[in-house]
Length: 210
Image (cartoon, rainbow, N blue to C red):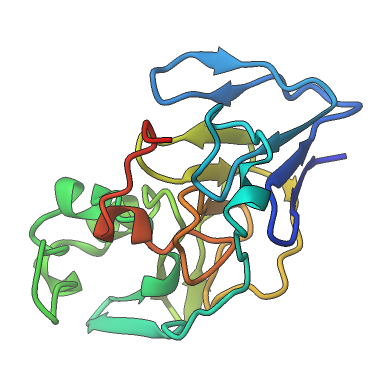
């Protein structure tokens, strides 16, 4: 039975690890917290016990309604590879820009230029995307991010990074979404609930604030 993740309406993200060996949530400082049975992670951004829920969502009337209007792929084509990008699920880690700046530019409308490096280099970088916002097509086959080992990472001033085989059934998956590599909002500001859409960065969310 895989790790079960349940976003509760207008409430926290429920985590269930019963009957399996899934002991760890990796905290921003590198510390690890043990999950025993069931726990609830804050996704309204207001808990005084982050990343855990303390009921603050009720006090601020947190609304988890999905209001996403940007779920469409940007497609960038080179002779031997096509790169796809879905802005609605990008967590803004800049992993792609840092790893392969010849292809992934830091700004501009045409910021993905897959002809700037070999297909192998592009694929290696796409696979490092922690939110699954990047995917690629070669030989007529589209490849989404994949991970087999279950983990939850809490990013400082950012989202929950989820990877591995998990039991998770949101109302909708965005186009080209990976179901084993994705980022969940914890600032409460995302328009694409329960997923992260980089609102924490755009709105300079500080997870130490209460």
